[in-house]
Image (cartoon, rainbow, N blue to C red; front, side, top):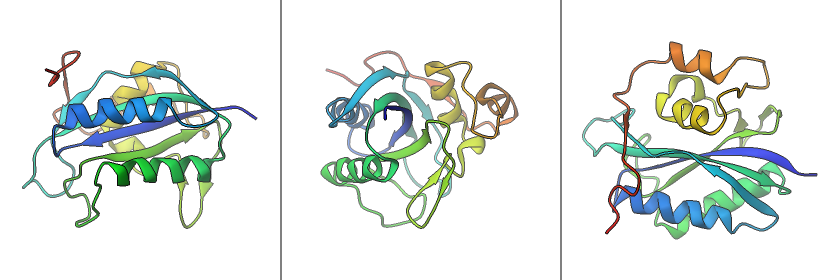
Amino acid sequence: MTVVAYVGLGSNLEDPTAQLARAVAELASLPNTTLLAQSAFYASRPVGPQDQPDFVNGAVQLSTELTPHHLLDHLQAIEQAHGRERLRHWGPRTLDLDLLLYGNDSIHDERLTVPHAELANRDFVLQPLLDLNPGLTLPDGRSIETLRQACPDNQLRLLPPKAGSH
């Protein structure tokens, strides 16, 4: 069965824009998966500790035959290949990949929560999702557009295309 999934991307270390661009290419090459669309990239203040660089965030829309947990395994492998270290909660990272939505499924187990638990509170997640699909709704029927309008401001700034590329 093919499902449309949305993955959030974030980085604030080691050329974040390049990290995200590489990750998008790696997501596009996942088995039994097609990259349908990629959002613009946005810069924003970090959530949590403020003694770290601003983040660059975006999202992709995938069509996949992978199960949600198999997709999660691939996301975590890509993070590891980018040198992801989990040293501090909400701390700096080379790459963060979050499975935001998986079809119309609601999943909550020891490894995975979909929709992502903090999705409604993150303008740097909601805006890229709106870029990809302005009519997108959560499994409970709430619209991403309505959530974005009510979301706290995290000083989101649209980055120009190919920002940071040489």
